[in-house]
Image (cartoon, rainbow, N blue to C red; front, top):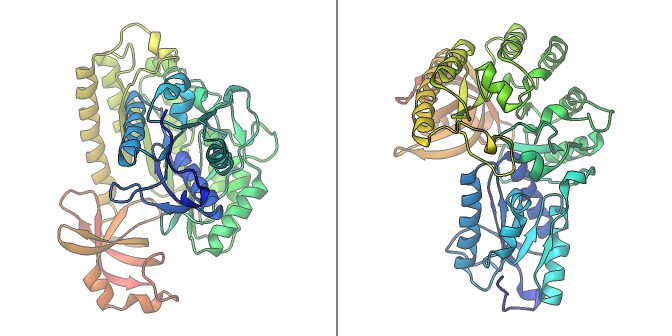
Length: 465
């Protein structure tokens, strides 16, 4: 492990944080940033043009590729400033603690459920000039790590971590080993944080967790429904989204209650992983395709054409060509708005890693490409149904796209809309927003068709702020 040549704490001001992985990781990176700011550190971009004194890589370990990216970013940080303190934090640390400790690019090892101690960890390091490891056996940790934020890097959407850990133990997944058992955040802390964000101007929040559907099962108190209802009552918040849900949570009772909350966006990510019951059983998923389809039907019963998105793994051990065809037929039947397609990645320590009939990578790639093509077709079809509609759009940013400036934002069902900045500004719609800004305000925009890739709606007339 390297050692930083500067020892005066006053010199140790610039910190660069690079986040990898899921939205829970993003939230934790934002929280570490806030703690460091409050302790007097200057947060700088993770950029080769800016030399930092401390680099924090918030790592991911969901796949082998994620492990490799984590190692690459740790080495990149040390290369950017060989005398800097490099901290490896998060899931990759939990998955391969011994390997990370041996990495000469790493000065401090910080596991999950220890990120809340980031300021103390740095102070101790600068005090005694020695490297240390801060990793707990997370499998026995039952306390929620109470991280907090009041601002996020995104202008309009804030991800709120309300849950950690997973008890599912799907046969392919390393996450229960890197994140530990389920732990739920106190509902009063969630409400307090969302109120702070609303006071700071955020209009949209996303409730997220490692296994969001299990919120409250560890405490036996509130449920996910209770949290949604509490956030729905907070003034200033205009949109609520949910992170990934398990299909079994989607019941008539659940959807009838959430459909009465007008702030909740009709955008639901239901994790599928496979459309073949044989493969689902081998994955140790807790549902079959009939139950999954029933959940989608319930959502469509209470919502008019909701956006249903999912994840699918191809090339799971033992997946035959026939199994893959069954999966493809099932996802066509559901007709998702969007699908995230992953090639199965072997993870040491999981049940699936030792399964026979591992699928050749070339076959995984071919199946992945086939489903990606289908996903693009279904997504374009879904978007096209709104191409000539009045759309409620929360403007997020101004972008230069192919040489032309657009305001871009999302509808409640997460369709991206691009609006000509020239025409938008010409109409002086900012005068209708109440605060003189276009970004972070909601407008009704007339859709005028899809772009040439059929991935986004173009809206260029009938503005109403």
